[in-house]
Amino acid sequence: MYTDKFQYHDYYLMDELLTDEHKLIRDSIRQFVKAEISPIIEEHAQQAKFPQHLVKRLGEMGCFGPTIPVEYGGGGLDQISYGLMMMELERCDSGIRSTASVQGSLVMYPIYTYGSEEQRRKFLPKLASGEWLGCFGLTEPNHGSDPGSMVTNYKDAGDHVILNGAKMWISNAPFAQVAVVWAKNEAGEIHGLIVERGMEGFTTPETHGKWSLRASATGELVFDNVKVPKENILPNVKGLKGPLGCLSSARYGIAWGALGAALDCYDSALRYSKERIQFGKPIGGFQLTQKKLAEMITEITKAQLLTWRLGVLKNENRATPAQISMAKRNNVELALNVAREARQIHGGMGITGEYSIMRHMMNLESVVTYEGTHDIHLLITGMDVTGINAFK
Image (cartoon, helix red, strand yellow):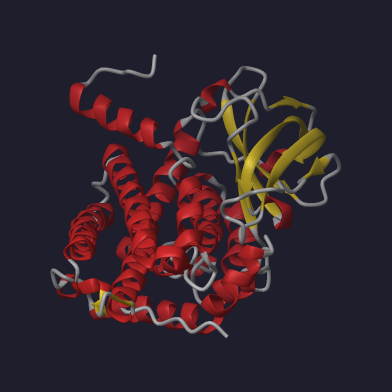
């Protein structure tokens, strides 16, 4: 059985910036991951199989909606706690973190922030506990980076609406009981609807043949004249600011998560460099290997500082969407670069399932694209610093 040997790396003594509660939460999730997820994740990834049994365990560990108030089943924790949890989950696998990110930031967050009190009490406790799994429907077959051009729509039909359209690349979709779906009404306004498993005309075909996020369930959402009760429409938001607000919350979690993947690759490369003997000494004793390792830990340390500061701003409700975009883009690029250099240090062993490197590398190729591509986040930063919109 695979033994998770990960050791945390804190070159600038960042732990001194964390509270005792932060460290307790982080360490408890790390222990959970080492005991229950790391031993099985490679097999599930190889088989492209979602470890569905972990959904309830993630709920029990408080990984779903940790910042949601306790009265709705959440943890009532701060944003740095949430980030640390996502870092520990993605340190193991991006797909597992995606499951938690979607549940907390893209399903529970909009229901809590934009929903009615009745919607909060009906859906949030079951989502928090892992009894229900949720998904988020924004991306469409022909509309990814330009969600405002969506064609999914609904029409008034008395006490309900009729929903038609399709969404794709939807994490958790094949197993979700609840979908927060964004669609246009007859006036062309974008609203969020809570679509429930079992509603006639609602199907979730699974996406097969992925080389990335293989331990995560991905699918489509198809709506064929689906009757959605009007009480399932989120009442407190309209327009793109609704889904974009959710994406800011999720992108914040990704920034922390990608840092976790980078740490895991670095940790594995550092350990391997001390064990692998060539030309009579450990490969970690050669200058080019040390260059790789030194650059890895330097970039990781910079990302740790960036992400911690973003968490402080998020706790103070001062983090801007553009600041979150910068962190998401930077940390995912960092993680990809670290994974590629770590693969080099591992040599041929780096492509095998005995190490996590290649799995991280493939997963991160999805993370660099979803919830805002690398280039889109670059342009968000560009628009923020120049005041000029390059999207149109």
